[in-house]
Image (tube, rainbow, N blue to C red; front, side):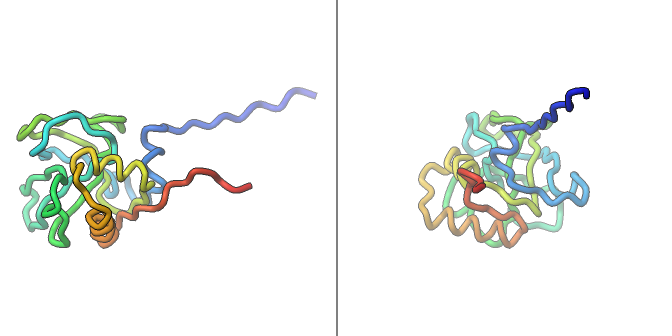
Length: 155
């Protein structure tokens, strides 16, 4: 009898360390290329950095990195950076006040809290537990849910 083939699986750990589940009704609806991200804080930030812009009718409102308590408001739109403009990447480098293309999750996704929190703290080092909880609430109102990270799957 011939040997059974070995099944292998593949996952991208850079992406799956952040995303627990993404509801797919069309990839462009949930994750999309955002071309007008401007950093008030330059540097290299990990996947999971949070960006925002004021809610507006026009698409011209500029996205920026969340780096202050005042950036957390129900009147803002939010997205989670998952890569550069080509693919999911572990880090994205921003230059202060220079627009940068990124791929970001905009809605209907569940994230792992540890990677999300690391991404947020990379731009907003002074975030308190209350700031993080408030941001999680406004993300949930937009359809991005932050879940506790799994450390083990029970047998």
